[in-house]
Each structure stands twice: as structure tokens, then as C-alpha cells.
Image 1 (cartoon, rainbow, N blue to C red):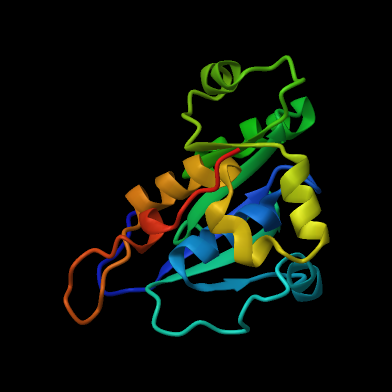
Image 2 (cartoon, helix red, strand yellow):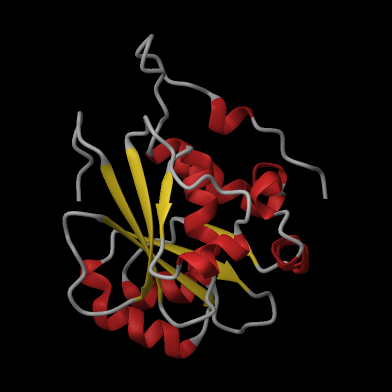
Length: 189
């Protein structure tokens, strides 16, 4: 789907299987874009992102934590799929619906034998960004600190850069691109 100037851009983040990180990625994208994030499970989303404002006004974007990848994907949205592992079962689900997908985010588990290149070759689709699976992200999420630290985590650097390049934030007063996504300092490992 092409972004339409003057209209709110609707971004749906799907999981190939439960527990693949779609809620985390949806929250990170929403945080980078400073926009509202909707979830079919608001209590679960609020648990993972406890400091998230209920509404964020004035953004040209809205992100939806869309749940499990299914038939009936709304093509008027930008549809992003999160694949963790890469899990072979998640990959099979994704392959069956790849024509409805605009972008793929990989939560990379280093012990998996399927490589990012294997995924791109099998699906004939590029991976937009990789987020390394990390104990640090899990611990921050469990402690309710992910909201305030997502901009500083190196694990999200590639996703953050992809979001900044795909959807620049413009200052409504000046009409100029804001560097706010890129300006956030990443914490050294």
C-alpha cells in the first residue's frame, strides 16, 4: 500500500505465530513514530508497554497490533509481519500469505539454522529489519521499563532506522522533517 499524503497512515503489525514479538515490534514502531497503538488485547499491550499514553493526538500514523496473521488482511493498511526464529512453522504460515504482506521484520534467534538469506530466497521477499532476540529486551519488558528505554536499545537500532527512512516525521509548523527518531541516543552494548 502506498502512503497517502494528508491521510493517516494505518500500519498493521501481524505475528506469524503467537509469541513471535509482534506486540513488542508494534509498540516500538508506535514509539518511534510517536503515534497511537491499538491492540485486540489492550490489557496485554498495557502490561508490556505500561507507560504508553492511552491516546496520542496529532500524528499522521496509527499502528495496530493486529494479532495472528490470517486471511482477510486489509490491503488499505501497510501490513508488516513479525517472524521470530526463524521458526519453520511461522515461515510456512507466512509463505501462504506473502502476497498480502508489505514488510517483514525478523526477530533473530542466533541458534537457528535457517538464515535471513534463506528466508529471502524462499519467499522472494526482503527482510526490512532484524531485531536480535535479547534477554535484555525480555527483562525490560517484564520490569515494565521497555516504554522509556526502547529508543536507547541497540537491539532496536535497525528497526528504528528502517522506520525513520520509511515514515519521516515532519514538523507540522515548519513542514520540515524532524530528526527526532534518529536523534535518540542508542546505548552502547
